[in-house]
Image 1: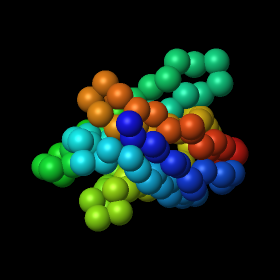
Image 2 (image 1 turned 90 degrees about the horizontal axis):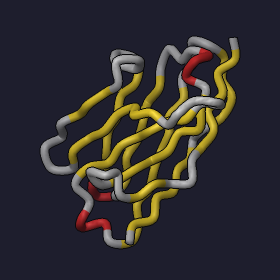
Image 3 (image 1 turned 180 degrees about the horizontal axis):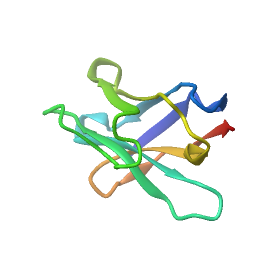
Image 4 (image 1 turned 180 degrees about the vertical axis):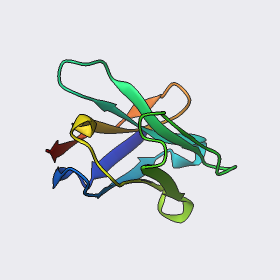
Length: 115
């Protein structure tokens, strides 16, 4: 089992920045991929970004490309999402994930962008 603990959400004005953090614990030696999904009110959950633990390859949704950056710290078993130039449509609950399924999900952290 892997436990994921997110932090860093909050309220920010459009154009602002936030940095989300996610710490993994448990059977972390099996983690190959970590990422972020989000779910806005009334919408389906959607992919945001992912990073491969070994190859540092990253992948982004088109809607966040160029504004969000995913990174990781292997020593801390942590993954981060730096979000810049935030827009009201980025408002959502953001979930940290790991595994290719993804197999594990965090509890989510709320990000609200005001116009």
